[in-house]
Length: 258
Ligand SMILES: [Zn+2]
Image (tube, rainbow, N blue to C red; front, side, top):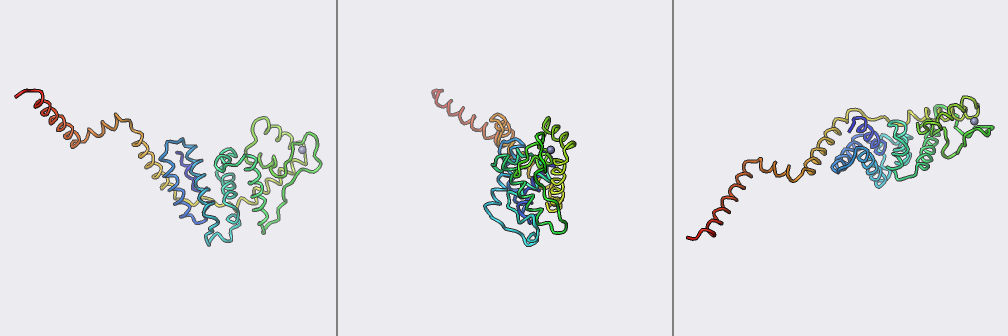
């Protein structure tokens, strides 16, 4: 598994538990258990994250003292995971949809709502809340107030022809340009609220991963490989030879008449 995936898992866990050591412990134990199963790297990431959010939701809101005044930790676990995944690890809506068992449209709605909510706690600076463009023309893209195209574009979810169309349209339409600019402001205004990963835990994850891979390798050994390994031990080879010798004498005593 790549190092940045370990970092992402740590960050996801730290978005769910405000105390870094606790978050690290949960993420490490969950990763160790799930890595024992014969899964692809992508499946491991998704299942570990899904198990972590399930655990956090089961436990309820247990906020560490240090995080009590942190607006981010007042959001729901699912909202926190989505914001960290989108702002810090750049996970796709598709991955989040599979982890959280929500439709992609719902992921967009939850993200939009959580971003709004977090921006409203901003007290040091007044920001312009994003909304639908004024004076929509027929060529303007449809603006859904619950999950606008501006958010999808900034989350890197608009690709190919659609992205080309939007970028081209924004250049020519002042209304849509303003909507996109205010959405950018919203993104920047909450960036500092979303926690960064606590450094220096990563090596530990690497050990857990290697250990799981080793155990998994043994459990997947073929019978032939297992027999070869068993016979390579001197005491086992002696047992086999003893068994054959005794059997040979026993057969001889039956077959050869005295
Ligand atoms: Zn427009």
